[in-house]
Every structure is written in C-alpha cells, then in structure tokens.
Image (cartoon, rainbow, N blue to C red):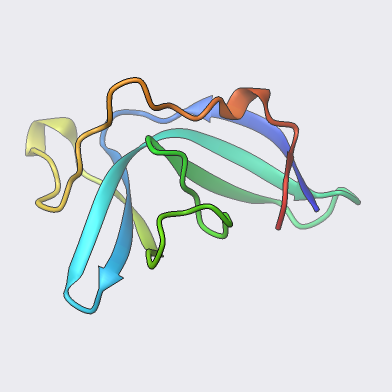
Length: 102
C-alpha cells in the first residue's frame, strides 16, 4: 500500500500519453503531481494524475490503455496532436485521497 505524501499542481504543458492500440495514442493534460511512498516510508515515486483521473498503475484507468510516458510541450509550442480535451466538470479530487493502492 502506498500513501500520498505531497500533491502539487502541474504546470501547463505537461501531458500523460496512453497507448490504446498499436498505432493509436491519446494524451490528457496532467493536473497534479503526487509524491507517493510505501507505508514503511521507503520507496518514493512521483506520479502525474491526468485530467480524467488516470495515473500509471491505477486499477480504474481507461480499459485497454497502457501508460507510455509523461511529456512536456511548452504552451507556446502548441499541443500534442493526440490531445483529448479536458472533459467539463470531471476532475479527480486527488487532494482528498490519503492512500493509493499499488
């Protein structure tokens, strides 16, 4: 079991890319970065949570989607070609979660 140690908002320009099929990817904006650690205080890692509430290793990610990588594209450089717009009113209340399975 892992717990969230710290949460910070993600700067504009960070995206999580997911593989849906051999030749199809999808990017979502990352909304927050979370620092996780094992229950015993060891094994820290940082994960990005995207605007639809997905993160690498989560059990309720989009069916068939596999995390590829995080990417940064400066806002003035445009957006990734495979960007999916942030859905209206659908933000994960990550700050209220105390424990993440993993």
